[in-house]
Length: 615
Image: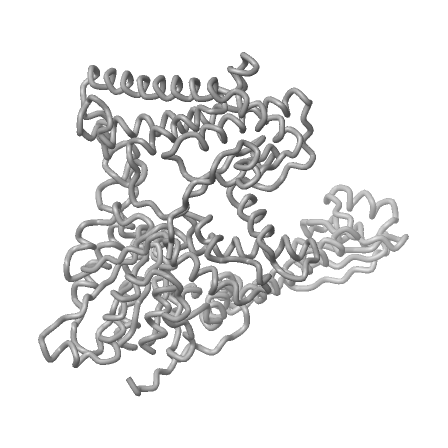
């Protein structure tokens, strides 16, 4: 790997075609203005009017060439006319002593006619020439004559400084990718035993978890050339362009082998063939077919090309793309767990000034479901809030406010409450909070507020103290009860119901339906009633959405209703038994607007729930 890689020679940049075009347009506009200004001063008269003006002694001079005449009146004005030379015209001009000048008909050369005929073509050729010479990126992606050239960006080894040390978390993915790095650095290590490195590696996972960063780190660790392109860059309105760009990309890659080709969002061209709902997929399928052909022909010896690709939707990719010999290894890049989140926070916290009181481990535990990009945004939002307050450093309260802003939106300071609305909101959130504290299977309570944020008038938060890979039936049932807490409190105290329960009912119904249809947590038994064709526009064939009878559908609805009713009755009985605590919590929340977990535990005389040890 001591070979020195040189960036491919690119054409020298010439004049910018846009400026050349604007220059010619400006000349044309200037000529039109000049021509119009000249013509506005010339009065065009008919032949009979010309004779009349001559007879009235108003014409001073005239110039005649073939059938065109231009003259001057006695008062200095200029006129033009189309004439038919005749004795009457000449006699009239002579009788009135008009100064006459005659020119023979103008004969244009063949060269003039050819120039006039081919001037537009010459202009277009000049435009194309300048456009061709201006470059437009590596691979000719910006050239008129290079529409079939690859738009991939080329990075030489010394341009890529990202390594695995810069990628926090995703330890399992990094371990799998180290094999690729080892092969590129020392291929003989694998060849001596007959091992073959995977020709293609597919990185799959939710957005923001570092798939592109991992691909750059592989290239940085291996110190080899790197080609980067998006799947959408292959597809154009012109038929055959995508396939041509694929051929050009791999031609360039083989010239710079050993190297890495990274295709981001490969599902743009790699979706299953023959699944279009309205046709028009021929160009994309041709591009995919060419990609399949190029990948299948790779050499596995030293000097080969390794393809890395990233997608959020591996389930919609064509099976031929995923078979051994093409993308024969799939690496999942999952959401970071609590330990990885803390590591990611520490990486991004290097660039900001943190207070010594900030516990990044606690912040990591309070951000379940956050991707690496979300955590970076959390650090930035906290820094912005601290800067706005002109604080000396970023404190825990800034992280709390930043998380609230990211999850549910910023404070709506201009929104006004009536006292009745504010009290009903306080009881609504107190209902959620109290049930969360009374039920042992819920997540630990974090805080409750009736400060409007985003589209919510208030929120009661519970945050898991650990990462969960599964949930029990008791936990799901408790979540349904807590979702119904706001509605139960409103009806118990005010004998009224607000529209603010709509999102709560949506969540409760979704959980209950999944318990019946997906998890087998009902008398219907351990049967999966969820069909894979519920969202055909995501890339699957359109099929019948139901694979069970109407009678079974009615039984599913009955079981969902039973779960909701049981949770409703259980939550109602808990609130009735703890009515004093509900009133105390709601009235305190009405006054203070925001209460944290420690304040609520002390207020209601409830022991804090024991948390799990994360270390």
